[in-house]
Length: 303
Image (cartoon, rainbow, N blue to C red):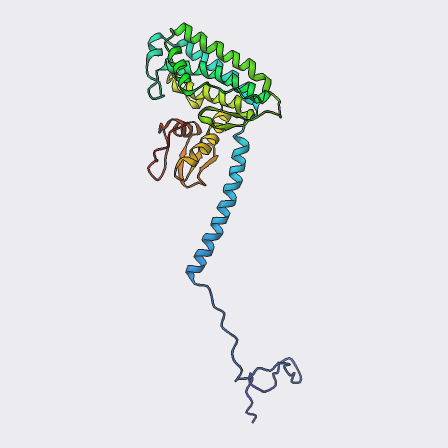
């Protein structure tokens, strides 16, 4: 009886074969086994998964941010068109105001409604200088100085309601007439806005549209961001996240009821709400119908 054992040094045979077929590389019992494959530990697998998820989130965040930038940029022509609507809405609100309404506090700390309207009138004058700067390249600052700006607002706020109402309307109409010069231009020059902030020339119409819309809300006479055009609210949210991000705002992701997302400092704690309510919180610090799993932080001052 043969003492050869299959799998050692004897020829290997297969039942279907009529004769032995020699394995070209016969295995020997004394040959070392191949090294055992080491499986990664659970901790390693978890870390790899976290890295993949992080890369995926970064890719999604970058794509969303590019979309936000595109959606949040109104062309000069579109901003001018929307400004005409915003001015008409403001005129309607002023028509309902009484002298008592004018002297009552606004949502701007330390300002009455008269101060808000006075600011809108003088801002229209100031931004006409920036229109000229953007169109020609000749530096024409919005204000002579911050002190002069404040004095002009205080003086204008002392006017009676009819005179102040006419002042705002006249200044607004003058600005809209002048800003038409920027419509369709692709060769505009950068300007310097308030607080010495550089600003592309094609953003001047948006700067005025923002002032009229936001300060209309500040009058606290029934007009809210919910009544502003959605594209204005979205543009405001994009700008607000850009301006507040570098000011120490904690990482947050704003999620609107319309399904859109806006990120501060790369995104983080989720805050849910209507876009209009999110903008009210970012721009004025007013919490209204917002939800989050964490307490909402105190935001830096808008400016």
